[in-house]
Amino acid sequence: MRVVVDLSRCEGYAQCAFLAPDAFRMHGEEALMYDPDPDDAQRDRVLRAAAACPVQAILVDRLEGRPQERDVPVPAASS
Ligand code: SF4
Image (cartoon, rainbow, N blue to C red; front, side, top):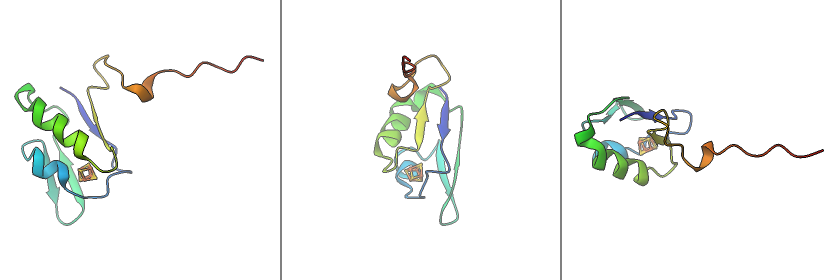
């Protein structure tokens, strides 16, 4: 599975590191380190971590053809 964390959003709350410690790890007080390709066996934990992130910084499987709502193209305004 593919994981991307938008580090510009991440506030270092560490919810993800608590819920999926094999995939997410805090480095110091605020810096998050993560595995961008965690084993599928961690899927449930990673999804729970993504759901728990207070700022929705964790994006899962966006590169595997399963777009999330934000990826849906917005139709161009007709002129
Ligand atoms: S839960 Fe979200 S905000 Fe907190 S460390 Fe993880 S990615 Fe960052």
